[in-house]
Amino acid sequence: MITNQQINIINFLVVCTSDFARRHKMDASSAYHFLSIHGGISFLIHHYDIEHTLSLDDTLDDLELVCHQNGGVLQ
View (cartoon, rainbow, N blue to C red):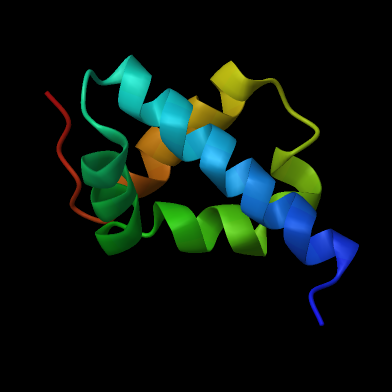
């Protein structure tokens, strides 16, 4: 059975991925792929307790930094 916490994390991932895609003018699938291979999704899951309390802009900035540190280059 899926917990409320897991549902909250999934919803957070969807919102962050969608807004990351919009910010970088890419489709959601490409954004998810980029975030997955460069550690962004893992970062959001592991730091959900903190990241979900920040503004969405701050969270997206954190994602960009994490991905950049893991070799992700955004245009």
